[in-house]
Length: 113
Image 1 (cartoon, rainbow, N blue to C red):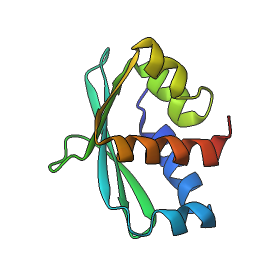
Image 2 (cartoon, rainbow, N blue to C red; image 1 turned 90 degrees about the horizontal axis):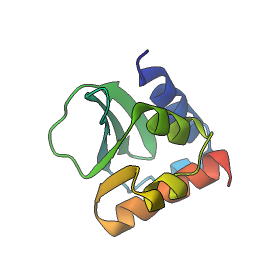
Image 3 (cartoon, rainbow, N blue to C red; image 1 turned 180 degrees about the horizontal axis):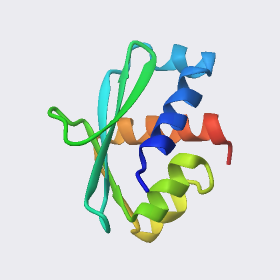
C-alpha cells in the first residue's frame, strides 16, 4: 500500500489549520520522505502557507526524512511522535536544524503530543 494517502491527509490537516497556514506563509521548502525498507520516495512542498504532497523524486530538496514504512506511516498519521524514532535512530532527518524544528512543530500542532 502506498504512503501517498497518509501524506495527502497530513497536507489536508496542515492546510485546514489557520494557525499553521499563517506560520508557514513564508516557509517554502521541499521535504522528501523515503521509506528505507521499500525504497519508495514521496514529497511534501510548503509554499505560501499551503502544503502539497506527491510521489516520486523531486529536485531541490531542503529536508530529507528516511525510515521504515511503518515508522513513516505512524509519524505522518499522528500515531507516533517523531521524537521517539528519531532519538532511537530509526528515523533519519537530513537538513537544516530550523527546518527540522519547524516540521516537529507542525506535527505537534496537528496531532498533539
